[in-house]
Length: 335
Ligand SMILES: [Zn+2]
Image (cartoon, rainbow, N blue to C red; front, top):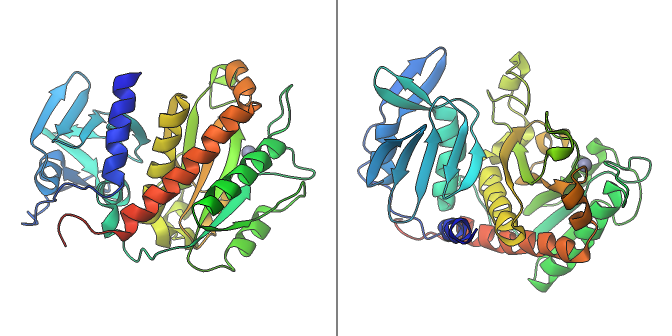
């Protein structure tokens, strides 16, 4: 759809650093504690980020200014920023006449996406570590065209070339069909400095979707207090993991890669999701895990086996990494 594409493009401009001015007055946040969680009111989000309008439209609460339109699903977790879907960790609540957004989602998701140049401790990076998922005895997903481990490697090799053409240094966790444990991948990646980490996978099944599930989804590490994808919060979800030092960078990187892959591939959006996969928990670098389509879906299975689609995914990731670097290192707008 053209209009959706245009707004995703628009959104990526935001990511590239053309960020509207947040209110410099630092209007006090209106906070509410509800059932053990801290929330902020939508009204104070509107003020802080300088949104011009806030209105309820059907099941959505919409905040909008000249650059970005945010749609919060009332009593739901799905939030759209210029039509890119994010799955929040907590529901948007309507409580005593006010709309509430959890403080974790605001701080760990909304803010780093809207203001990537404010990511704490973001340092320029020159190295991209590519992690082709699975390998050797671990085939990953399988369909009648091939094995996930092979597709992951093919796309990773394309990405290596695309990134080298953009003058990045590239490291691969594997460059052959060999088995590597998740812990080995993490240990290897953490030997390098000033890097980001991209794990490449293709999906299968899908929660409840079976063979009908399709589209692209991107995982980043759950912040402390946020559940692993697909289950409720457990006590050890409150423990900080090594990767949580990069919470803000993780979501900004995920947004850039996810949005660009959607834009260029035209595949359905399954959202940016939170998980505690072990390749994400132990990595010291900004890290994401991309699922570039469903091997279990009849149409996507053919696409994934097609070199043109593989190149589209590879080039999208490379372009997104360039945008992400610009967004995190350049300070436009206010100081
Ligand atoms: Zn996989």
